[in-house]
Amino acid sequence: MNLVEILSLSVKDFFTKEIIFKLFLVIIVSILIAYIGGFYLLDSLFNYGNHYNEADISNSIETNLGAIPLVGIYIASIVIWIVVALLAVIGAFLGFYASVLFSLIIAGLLTPSIVKVLIQRRGGSIEDIQGFDNFFTAIFKILGIVALHFLTFVLLIPLMFIPLVNALLIFAVLYSFFRYMLVYDVGSNYLAKKDYKNIVNFYNLDIFMITLVGYFASSIPFIGIFSSIFTVIALFNYFHSKST
Image 1 (cartoon, rainbow, N blue to C red):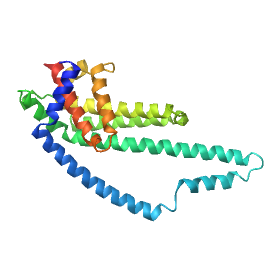
Image 2 (image 1 turned 60 degrees about the vertical axis):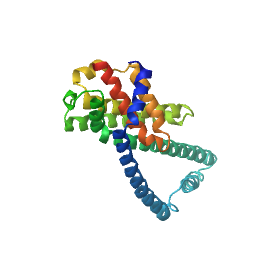
Image 3 (image 1 turned 180 degrees about the horizontal axis):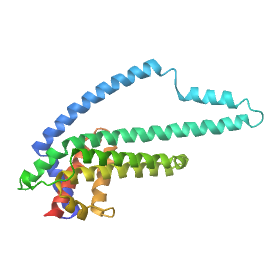
Image 4 (image 1 turned 90 degrees about the horizontal axis):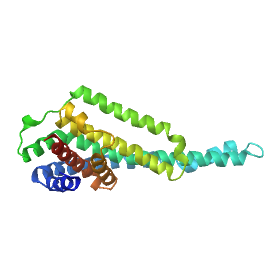
């Protein structure tokens, strides 16, 4: 199958009753998490919002550095700009990271059951599912992926002060995280390790397009909750077409 056929088949799979039922559970869990998280967030803002804000930071810096003769006010202005820019970059990164991470957690929990549903829809059986890596190995690799991308972000912080460049870097780091997590998740739950190594590589354009579409969708409110599940389905169909 070509990429268009894989995506078309994935859309059909996405709206089957088995998958819809799983999505319904996702909606319920998401609403509960949003309600609980929103409650604690509002409570925190109400209690501590007046004690820590951007204006306080700026005033504190200006007061301490502005007293330096001649150049003090200029140094204070530069430091304020750097601090505010850094907070904005970190805030944007954490916001996007949280939405992507939430969708990945949902996908990770549902991937094994989705693979079972899809393999049976293709006329196969659960015995056809091979997979590789045990639970502890998988956790270790996932933590490695998280640590690698976090370290990459930290090393790139000096470039985050450059307009447009910072947006591109955040996009690249988060897309790479999204791709590696889902490709490994689906591959390790379905393919034999040998087949996984033969199919998956950095220059695979089909995998790039599938995960890129899923990543863009993951940043859209509400739709993002389901984008990772659709990406799981599309990756399964791609792996299935290459391994049969």
